[in-house]
Amino acid sequence: MEHEVQYHIGFGKKDLGQSPPLIALISGDPDRARIIAQETQGTVLEKELSENRGLNSYLARLPNGRPFISATSGMGAPSLSIVINELYQVGVRVIIRVGTSGSIQSDVKMGSVVITRAALCRQGAADDIAPKEYPAAANPFLTLALVNAARELKVDWHIGITASVDTFFEGQERAESSANKNLLRHLHGVTEEYRALGILNYEMESGTLFKMGSVYGFAAACICGIIADRTQSEHPDHQAKERAVHDAIRVALRAAETFDKEYMQPRYWR
Ligand code: URA
Image (cartoon, rainbow, N blue to C red):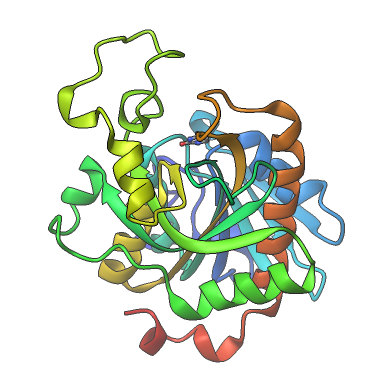
């Protein structure tokens, strides 16, 4: 059974060679998954695993030879939950999300990266996995590896709490740029409220990923490039995206490379 091709991600353990990777980097965008495996300096592409349903996955090696999977999670928590479930079934136990995000704090600038240490999880998919009150906390050791990599690479980085929600428009209080002008009452002012609570940014996957990490037993962390400044505008900025995503990828790859083998054991995943 465990060697079967997984239905959604389109590959199985048998496709991963003699020493299957424990580590995966996941991105919402299939193109980013390909760039991580193929085009980032120092990574060596071993093979494309699948393009099933646009969930492009690649087997690659880090500069120190450590194998990893670069996989697409799709957009939002329901798609991510399926991909993570199947990655777990092929043996993955260390997962770094490399995403994009909108800042809600004036000091978290466009083009910088945010490392999430915990999420305010407002996601329906997560409610199928654990109670609402269950903490959405990143793995501290993997998160520290991200911070150390960000410091080493001298990128503009922040660490803090992220609001992880189900929708890009309504849930992140976008009305001007949205087709839906009828924002529900409970969402009016939500960004200001989160800002006052010290939350740094909005994105759409980390909360469910972190809860899955604790429930299933794997190390989960998240780094996002800031591509929108929600203190100024609702719109993502394409120029900022290039730098922010490039830096987030470099940091995630360096963290995956340097992550201490000691912490790749079940006692550190719970
Ligand atoms: N992703 C989000 O979820 N929100 C943003 O503002 C930008 C990227």
